[in-house]
Amino acid sequence: MVPDRIEWPTVGVALAIAGGFGAVLVVHDQLPAVTTITLLAVLGAWYNSLQHEVIHGHPTPWRTVNTALAAAPLGLAVPFGLYRDIHLAHHRSSDLTDPRLDPESFHVTPEAWARAGRAHRVLLLALRTLAGRMVLGPLVAAGRWARTGIAAMRTPAGLAREVGHIGAIVVMAVVLRAVGLPLWIYVVGTAWGGGALSMMRSFAEHRLVEEGTRSAVVRSGPFFSVLYLNNNLHHTHHERPGLPWFALPAAHLELESDQVADDGAGLYAGYGDVARRFLVRPFGTPVR
Image (cartoon, rainbow, N blue to C red; front, side, top):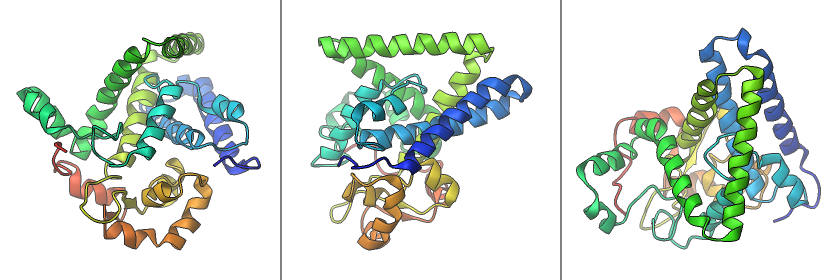
């Protein structure tokens, strides 16, 4: 769904993220490293949410303008065009969570599990816990994106996308060096920390159930609702993927998504509830 007018709340989010990153670059040398890393993690996760919003056609009627708001690889690992292709394929999947059909699944096939060595199986099991997903997930995801990007380089379009992605990272590194922000602080904050916060959102959002929705709902307060641009209302997002983030709460009530999710993939009282259940306990089997 292409909006017929500019969605100013989303433009405001984009401006706030840009202003936040700009402020960190300017004042980082006056802040403790842990504060800078925390701010970069929040901004990185928020930017990931903005990219997701842009992938679904927001916030303007013009795709070029939308892409310009979210194409910079601030999280380093993910080429935006590749992310768009894979996420839209996830929405088209006829069998969510099946790794053969759902490119965003963290499950593996029985055949892949049978081939996996002991260390690989330990990793797959660790990724089924929230702690493991947040600590190791950004690194595993970066490896996935790298492999997918390299494979895509067999085509001229894929090669151009990867060259552009690498070139943008080089430009970012030059900017970071110019303002004196250590690269390791940026990587730990934006790429790892921001990725970890995004992994917390996606951790329990899909679950294989025989009947009912496979998209969960995590009720959350204002901070996480804005940070994730209401994508925690994940059943509603999958039912109405063309809606802008600020329209999801009303649609959520209309669809009675809390009850639908509770009867299906799950309804959680908040991310504290998710952590209480699955911080170190596996969220189901890794084999699908």
